[in-house]
Length: 165
Image (cartoon, rainbow, N blue to C red; front, side, top):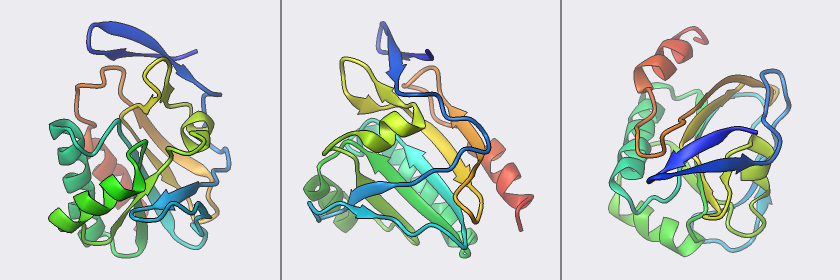
């Protein structure tokens, strides 16, 4: 079982650790909607960002950097996934330019975070991570931060994305 540092605590990540080549299906509530939907990700590469809450400075920067990437890589899906309520994500979205990035909530059953292996025990938040899926929704890249307070390596992610175009 993987662990992360959340503040001064070392906590387990719940769920099965996802491996390269695994299929990924996302069922979540879009910003502003409390009705979960299965996302149609096939046919495009998909970049998924998971983070604890859009309402923190590090998560905010992660979302903003993802939005910038979404403006550069127009033929990719870019989604953010957190435990924020859909209404909070709608409010966040109304205050930020997200380009081609979409925000989704996993608050209802936390199944996406469990399936990706990023649900932090005790606090029930998503760990800070980045995933890339191929055009058939198979995992081809993952980056899970051991220290939640650290930003993801966007340079490494973008280097990988450039190999896909």
